[in-house]
Image 1 (cartoon, rainbow, N blue to C red):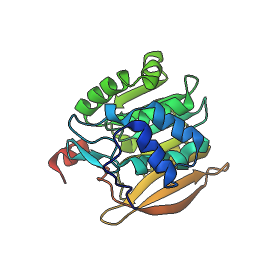
Image 2 (cartoon, rainbow, N blue to C red; image 1 turned 120 degrees about the vertical axis):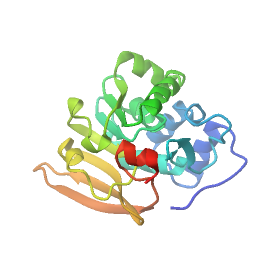
Image 3 (cartoon, rainbow, N blue to C red; image 1 turned 180 degrees about the horizontal axis):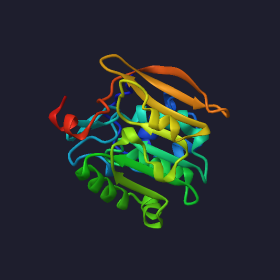
Image 4 (spheres, rainbow, N blue to C red; image 1 turned 60 degrees about the horizontal axis):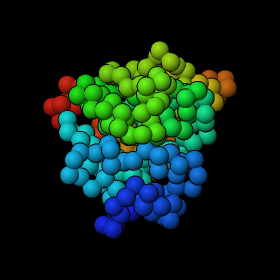
Length: 230
């Protein structure tokens, strides 16, 4: 996946406009969500939050480049309507979880799952300072939990949309089980060579899988293996 680098982008609005100009964002709803959630609130201090590249957030993980977040939002847009439920596995700094929450609104539910407790704590602080999503956090329609995302989060299943922010060697069965008929899962799959897979669940419970693009993500693994950098 190409990156849309430019050093002249220094505001969140300019970042979104750049992605629109390059055709990465075509949905008004996605643009509105990414404008409402300032990426600058979700990256380490001293970083360049609006430049189109991934960056380290500690614990051997990264926050994805803006174009990857935009692509995933676009792929899931029809499953992120007001009132719908969405699960964000490997929620990291909380950025994409906050975008999901803005799209499904107060009548929906957005759940982030992250197995590093320190990241969960910091992501909640990020969301609290993010404006649009902070109200949803206070209301309870947005929440971030410590857990093994490979097992999903059964409490609020089934989900209309599931996003996974790390690459699994194969699609976890628990995530397919927690996907609602008519729902969509977006997940990077592979080890050295990875593809972004789009999994649609049919009304009879069967699934259709297609590859969207080649990607490079950190592995979806146990907390211990992640901290070792395996």
